[in-house]
Amino acid sequence: MREARRTTLKDIAESLGVSVNTVSRALADKDSVGLETRKRVKAEAERLGYVPNSTARSLVLGSASTLGMVITNPSNPFYAQLISGMEQHCRRHGYSLLLMATEESLANERRAAEELLRRGVDGVLVVAVQEGAEHWRRFRAAGVPLILINRDVPELNADLVGVDHVKGGYEAARHAVAQGAREIYFLEEDLGVSAIADRVEGYRRAMADSGLPVEPGTMIKVPTRRLEQSAMPWDPSEAYRLAREVVRTARRPMAFVAGNDYFALGVYRVADEAGLRIPDDVLVVGYGGHPFAPYVIPSLTTVELPAADIAVSAVERMLRRLGRQDPAGAPEQVLFPPRLVVRASSGGGGT
Image (cartoon, rainbow, N blue to C red; front, side):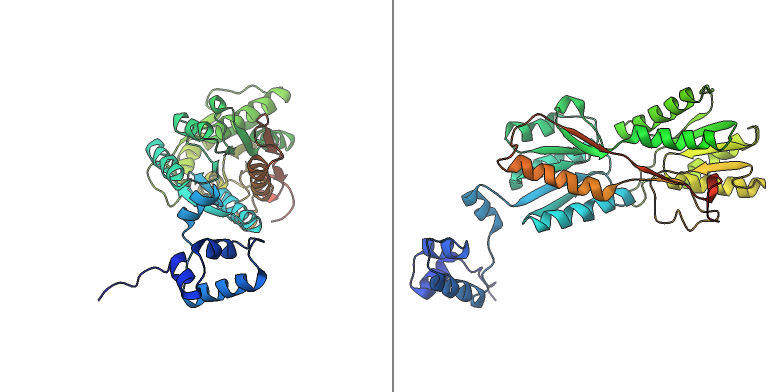
């Protein structure tokens, strides 16, 4: 049995006795085709089951009406919110969003870049692996706008829209100091990306402004698990193991400032096993504002990230680059401030 052949513009034209050019312009709602003819063409296209060929259409129009989005790990709750927000905003403006995940792999990122170039996307939104830039320079050379999300690649000299992670790390550590912690430990993932480096910088600034030294052993690097599995970007077990080594000798009250809320869960277990009370003996501050933060006991103080603001700003910036307003203006950095939400784990409100 032969497969059903895809309906073409020529099929519609022959059925109605008009030219292929007329059918094409009618389906595109061109004013050069009368309203009644447009209605007839659209009705016949629907009857014949015509589905537009987006690749061919992009070659004719010079636009695919598609934006590529390259992201490291879509299971990261922050990035999941970004994807949802960007997809909704793209849809409102007539664009589709083509998502590709790299899992922190440079090889995967290069393949994603090649695929997006091949598909002729109009622009690309990128959470970069940050280990190379040449494959992204090809987009710039081709005149395809590229906007970095949450991680900077300075050698690209491209637009960046993301979180002010220096401010986030600063406010988390400064809050722990203000709550009276005598020793403050910073649990951060051992991964060489700008967002993590910025949080560390914020922590160091907060300690310096508080007149406190960053003692040896207070900066704790948690081994990354992002390169080993895709389902979960962080593993509380490593933070648990490292925090358990610390609580035996630290002075009370002490504080753990975690680079993400999952690491804070590891600290919670350590405190429970050691018979320590949160926040009386151990203050805990997380990062990320993940959905479980208000529901653990005690509720977790955390730094919430403005995913919705970043999503809208990044898409709007892309639309300006694609339009006439600002197609080739100077690159901009737009960093949104995160928000410290104080709860019971650091002596704030709640249970």
